[in-house]
Length: 113
Length: 109
Image (tube, rainbow over all chains, first blue to last red; front, top):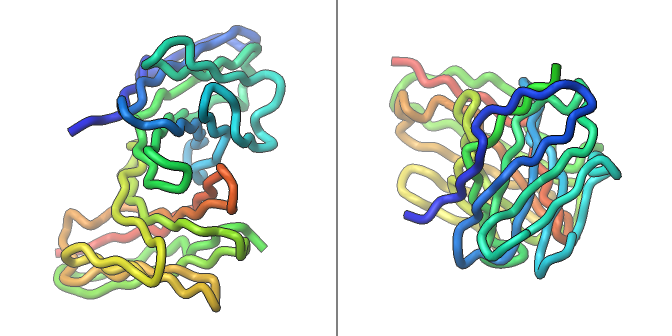
């Protein structure tokens, strides 16, 4: 069964450093998403991406964040200058259509120290 | 009013019980709704989608009530393995999906 994969599973970084989180969506999916979940809190939408551009983003997704699909398979989330409050699980998801079911990857746990 | 709201629970039920969760949404433009289950420190896993009036998959039934703007999830014959947090999610009419905070279910032997 096809699945979304994410690397790394855990990333520890120092405040102010840049991090790139990587995702490989399901191969025939066209819509890609990033979410974050701070420990003990709800899953929060960050951004949706289709046809090589951002479709929609939340107020969390400020200038520190960017997304990219550098090749035909990877989908990345970059945080330019990490803050302590960026510590969270970051989930990538993909879907075949705009309002179709989204399938989630296992997540990257980001710890900012 | 929160965009997607759920009773956090926890719901504590014995094995074999039937349990129902409700989820309300505030955006009348929402078209698609989903139920996910999330185990501790894991990713949300899709349970079922609710596009129109409802959906059934084995012991699980989801219903959508557009007039009252809520969706529900019914679990029949609860198993120990059903213990998890159940998340409802809905689109906002665009390309954004909003999740509720989740309802915790504990099924006891």
